[in-house]
Length: 260
Image (cartoon, rainbow, N blue to C red):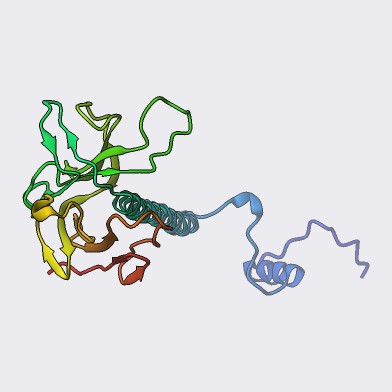
């Protein structure tokens, strides 16, 4: 019996044999999906979910960083305002002089007049405007303007801000625009010390023009209270350090009390 050549197109008639042949040719593992088939819907949904989680975490982290930076900047600005207030008040009180002045109507005024304080929004103090007025010396004159070296200054609390108002002349002159020393001030309270005793008001009565010391208590909008002590009429020295809560330096000391 003569066997002819086996055709290459021969296919087993049994389907099981065809599967066995394919398995023998390509291995007996799971068939691999071609790259051109793409991703399934489940895979896309999982990828989008992971991307969304990462994006939400990034946005939350960025927002926290921005808020922290803003809070830090606001705190630094507030500390700078406290330092500026203490430095300016220290200079004004230390350079206080016994020099009576006159107002715009020609009425004589004492050299140093202090009330119990001032406030805005009913936050305490007597609400008197101005709460402090004095005459100070050693007014710098860098541009050699024709004016005296003495300066009349006033302090008051208006619209939640501590203001310093200076006058170009001692007698009868209108004040210049006020300078904001510190914002977010609910009330300010002043006391004056002489011969070991404290008083809530000073007008030079009794033949004593200047007190020996002055105490300032500032009630902030957040409920904290800052206190500072200033020597009066002693000559200006180096300004004290920042009046941060719980510290004291020089002639000024700052303390913070939690809202009661």
